[in-house]
Amino acid sequence: MFERKMLNREKRPRKWLIYSPSTGKVFCGPCLLFGGGTNFGKQDVGFNDWKNASIRLESHENSCEHKTCVLVLQRRSDSDGRIDHELVAQYQEELTYWREVLKRVVATVKSLASRGLSFRGHEEKLGSLHNGNYLMTLELIAEFDPFLSKHIAQYGGKGKGCTNYLSSTICDEFIELMANKVLTQIKDEIKISKYYSIIVDSTPDISHIDQLTLVIRYVKADGTPVERFLKFIANVGHKSQDMADAITKTFEILKESFSEIHDALIAIESNPAQKHSTVCEAKGIRLKLERLETAFMTVFWSFILVHMNKTNKKLQSVDIDICTVVQLYDSIIHLISTERGNFDKYEQQALELSLVKEYEKDTKRIRKRKLTADESAEDITSSLSGRETFRVTVYLGIIDQIVVELVKRRKAYNNFCNKFSFLCNLTKETGGFRPKVLQN
Ligand SMILES: [Zn+2]
Image 1 (cartoon, protein in one colour):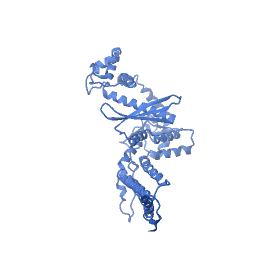
Image 2: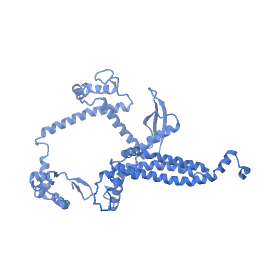
Image 3: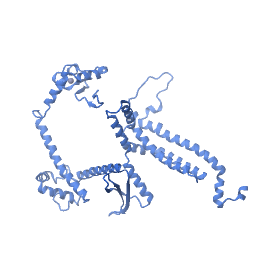
Image 4: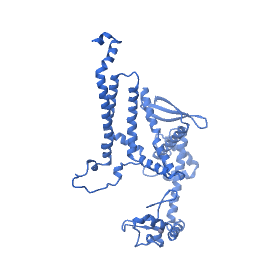
């Protein structure tokens, strides 16, 4: 109701519509002020005919009176000649002032970072010789820039509690924002070039902490090869397995297929050239994708499937013996059963992935219905929160089902193993086939 659906399916908020909690009715703001025709604009009438709301809203919206009132309001809201004219001007002035300050800070951070220079010195005091490159550069600019020199004179060196936007906190924040921007740019380039190689090396830094350097090398669209440093990963260890783990972990962060699919669906939905049925389907998939439950399942199943796949590959290898099969089953059963207690871990990952941060049950309205005489009170899950319900019915349900199925298969192999495993042991222990032992 508070949104207008345009012909091209675009949604626009009806900013003029106001709800009055005391009367329980809606009013049209501009019409109320300047005396519009219908109920929306009459102070003691208002509108609460919810059944016909969409038709009536539309007709009011298109009425001549409403349009005139909106225009009058628009004309009067031009800031010149309004009573808060001075206030707005002051606000704008402050806005430009601080933006000018930040522009100089950004330029400083950018030039220092691009040359790999250090930022901070031993102290954070303006005018000191040991205040580092960041403050030194700002002071240098201030020497020739009257604006910044005035700013430093007025706000600088007043300590904590006085905003001057020159402190290390602001500096750190800008560095982080810029780093994220650079990383996104690199990611985009990698996505376009599709193939890349990684260079990894580790060495201890000045404080004897081992730092693994991660560099990526790829060819840009115009044919120039580039090497990009991504990050340091501290304390990984020297074993190849440790390094491999650290790298796969880092690259998982780079993987963003989930949000890519989401963006693609939105693009389809908002494309007016698409067929209506396609748009509906895209919307349906998007709504499903937006649920926290879906994100949870994505994370959880990717774990299960990766491990299942590894085990599967081993099980299908030609030279595997029956005892190893049973051991493999044991290990995967153990692995999956221990995941019972790791709900929080997956939930955390799902929350990072999902746009929606609540379980569906918590957001939905609970429908109450009358119980018939033979029905007992509500079932157990209805008193639980959305999170608990999901954990008990879905998460634990899946794990238990998988474990049951795996145990069933393991049992079959175990029977087989008990009967015939001595054959394998024979060849192992004696180093060859001994018909004499077999006869016994
Ligand atoms: Zn109106």
